[in-house]
Image (cartoon, one colour):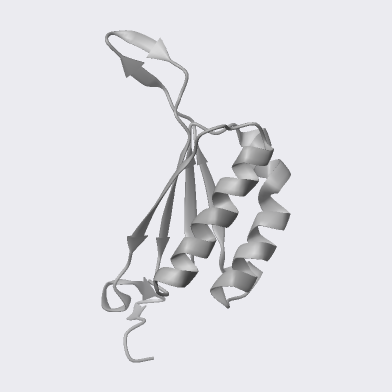
Length: 111
């Protein structure tokens, strides 16, 4: 279920790291690899009226798993992108409520 949205990151770079990244995150998050969604969002960023090189950041939407797992996950994502040449990377987590997340019309709370 973890959904990673990449901004300011080239599709080819996410594609290159996708298998190893998901395998490592699945282990860190104690879930299976088939639960992950990786999404690449082309970014156009503007500053003072000028196009600028997009700043890389990753949004992680997930059911919160605690600070230690979140910290480890952020490190894994950051390291993977640094290996692709991104010197600076921001990662932020958007925790989802199980009662507000539905699959096949049924929410995940109390299941």
